[in-house]
Length: 276
Length: 336
Image 1: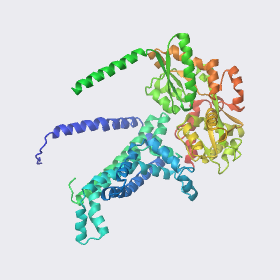
Image 2: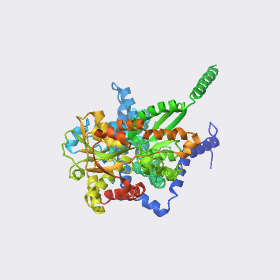
Image 3: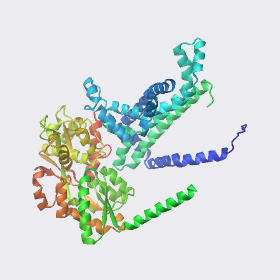
Image 4: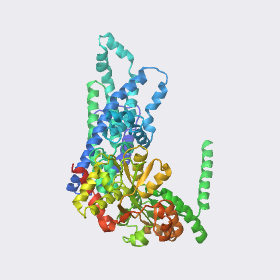
């Protein structure tokens, strides 16, 4: 093991601080969740977390969150591209608008989206006759999750794009790459780690989202109940232990998915020869 | 220099804060209540404060907290210092007694009428002119009809709705449990949205224009008509419904610790007084005092009421059979 000499000292101190801080802010509350759930016996735990209603809620929560994060990745990249590469009137305004889903209280977002997509709303009145039912169904959940996840991809990709010199693309072109090749052989590999980070953040946010979804979902058992709602429902029935049991499953699921995304990110970064 | 100034300013602010606390030496009460009682307790609090100042020569400030009944009960169990709780159903206060050990188990026997100074019931709210011709419970299970009611798992009012429907079906079918279950299953097949609370359902029905009929607290329905005007919605009274008894009680551990028992008890007694009962009638709850009830007779339609004790054997039992995980409500949705 060779230690590289660093200009600034303080490795021990900063690592100690990092661990203490993480423990206090993240690990202690999570431990509390696990210990509460541990008050259930294993068969009890299993029957709570595999009840049909709960299973249906995992499908909706994780499915809609992955889909929403995927959609946000594609359109977030587009938005970031337009904001970095082109000049147009009102660009500052559009840039600020991207952050709005961060700033808006989620309940307000939920109520606004519901009002918009309900059958007497601005958009709902045109969509419902076409047979597209957005509010009060799984599609509504997706719309809400896309809304709240929008800023993540844009904000993670934007700085990388700003650093990306157009000369690289010009060089690719002079070497005979076609436009599509330039994009997917040259630009995309550089952006990929940032895109994945954005995807992971948007996904993590969507899985835990409660406030905005609850207004637009309709909350019908087996159809449009999200997992956070199942947890709240159990709390309302004073079943603290089963509520935390579902929370534990959600935590483990999310953690595994995020871990997988991180691993993928490291792998792509290595493949493109960049240091992580 | 700037730091010195900052110190001085903060010292001034701090002492001003302390002074204002000292000047406000008066008794405060916290009333933790459920969602639709906002307007009622605003009136009650103002009237009681005046009474108490005249009789006990003490200023009283009553703070209110409103929300879903179960959420409110949980807050009290977890340490919110409520001097009195006034919730949607006895089960939630039972839980405060059982889990928080903040009051005796027999709390409901301490005040008249099962500790419920006012009652209410469940009625139907339909659109102007009643276009779907809804008259009674059987109309609600017709195919294609859309019924709005909140989720009984998260809303106290929704549990009353559910039990009202179940009680009707029992009565209509000679106490046949199977038939009652079939009826309620069909009814919930007609429910497109389960909001988490009663106010949420009212919004869905009134603002979003969804549904043909809303199952609602009578007081919420009357309030909706007062606020919206009779040209938008009207009330349909079913042949039979449930007697909803939202109970009130002093939280013993809290009032003993805060030394507020006397004023808290007087506050609840005021609810039973003619003056309190009159405010109750004004806010569309059914008064329990006969002389006041007579005055508000016209406001409340006549409806045959059954109570939860007779039909379901009390809240503990109803909760366990119907609303607990794996209970009858869950089965409605899982056996598809």
